[in-house]
Image (cartoon, rainbow, N blue to C red; front, side, top):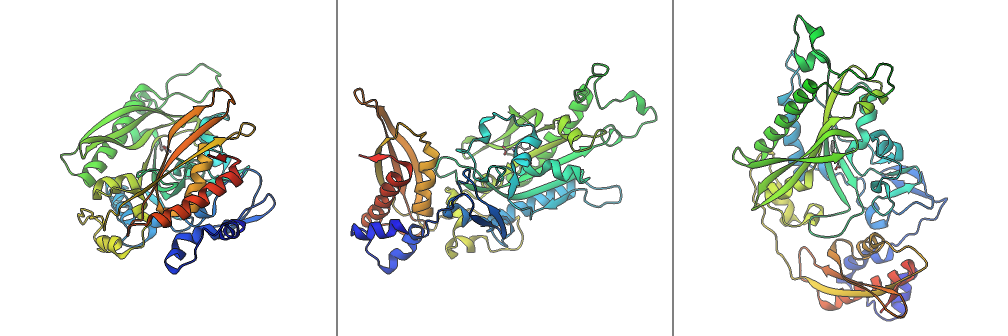
Length: 438
Ligand code: PHE
């Protein structure tokens, strides 16, 4: 609010009706102080010094694009569910997988990190990479956050589909909210090896040190069988969505919660694109969840990534568009209907730079600046990136220059409109990040 008044005093914000939607974000700058309550998707949370959830981000929580009928993310998730239902059947012919699409996005630090064996000092826990509600809770950074609790509840085969949140750079393929599908499949010895008369000859686990308190290691045959099932499942999924001819390759990867781990890359539109991460679930996670006689695999994939490739959608912001020109392209009931997305119009961008001296006494994080830009400019921000950085030889002060690309999805912005938003960004950056605009 102060900001709007400040800007009006400066005579920069000329209210006009077609600016109302542009400036909507500017007046809602709510500040949550430690001790305040924050309502997130219908639940109240106590805020503390760790909270870094901006009003712009908060406005996305609970939108659940993956549940919206005819939304491209819904179509893709339906196709994945159908595929998994059909692939794994009980002896009586029922789907083995259960599907969880309504799990609340606020999770504990334990769920998001500890339960997945992510070390206490791991970079992925940083405030600059996540949206924390308070010290103990955050908006989940991945659907893997639910693995452990669902396994503890006794589930052996499940999918979790939901919105996930990461503080990231801003460009056409990154948005602070996106959607993931998590798949988990557990096996008993006879489910993995099949039933044989001489079952004792088969072992899920390699012989460990006698009396060792370490979780057991997978027997090499167990690794082989799990790896084959996992990779075949995911390659067939990619073939189901992208066609039989699509070229794929496996790349070794690392995740603290799976070993071994891989990423699947697919050759589409003349480039290799990483489509998912997966691996064999660390046995410690199963032991901690009360399961000692099973082994399993897990995968996680980003729905936007799949949809952008499948429909040739060039910009991730499109998924949040409520423009009929976008939505009507997906208004059909059979999720497997082929679509080649037509961008309603790629209106001209406006590019403005901002340079400032960063404060020496506090820790300046580019992520704080990215959030601020997104908070003020909303979905008009197509890209923000650091174009120049230098340290003054005499004063020792460091200057950053960021290039902000503004683009409306449906119409061309005027330079004047963009200047107004840009100016608010300058004022806010000085106000809240302590930088000195040059
Ligand atoms: N959670 C991982 C991510 O978001 C993906 C993943 C899921 C990897 C399950 C392995 C197993 O990047």
